[in-house]
Length: 310
Image 1 (tube, rainbow, N blue to C red):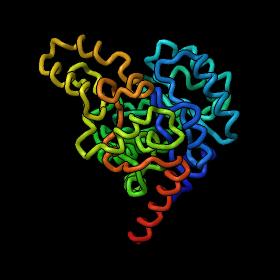
Image 2 (image 1 turned 45 degrees about the vertical axis):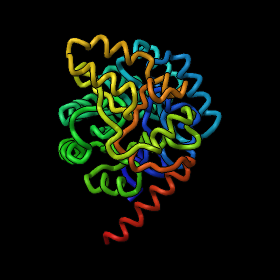
Image 3 (image 1 turned 180 degrees about the horizontal axis):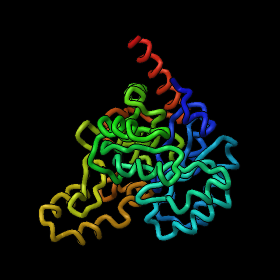
């Protein structure tokens, strides 16, 4: 069950990929996930190439296991970052918010696997055509920027339409979620919020506590009226955005309100005025533990569920 095309392609023990969360997915987290048998990911966000290069080299000093880098294609530094990733010969590049097609050939020259994140069948098919090695299918349950379709309905539709491996993302935090994704045809999972609540994750302790204390309806989507929906944990910021969204003329005011909001939460620990990006799986997370323990628990629970189903 854990030996899939994805584990063979990426040379990892378990088909578990850590989400490439901006400001959150640092070298410390990526190295810990890779050491534990998954695939750790450094999140670029809107950081310049020299900052990401330092993170990459920090991971290389910490582990010899494969790891990857997530690139937001809307970043103003995307061309510099892609050139740097080519020079550093990273194992995997995951991408979001755009089409990585023009970068794929060059990255593959140095053995880099390219895995875009997609929210729809049409985009998944397009990514396969431009040469993607696998696809991360992200449902609206995920934290941060989200689409409209749920993981449960989107994954099997994409599995039916493409031939490369599919990785399920959004709402997955334990072994039950892994089994569900596998049943839908996914050959791996991407997990973000659960790894935020790990000992190795360097986000502010109050950010982790906000997730641990979250209830089932606390991870809500804000910003739909701006065309850039984002899932965060309810707080003072989300209430302000909700009020502004009732008047669609306040789009610019909403955008100004959210500038720097993620950094305020992650680095400064301002969990009321900052953006605590987290998925709907927050309600499942009740503790903070090492990445190794998180992955071991997922695998053990998945094995138990499988045995009970047989």
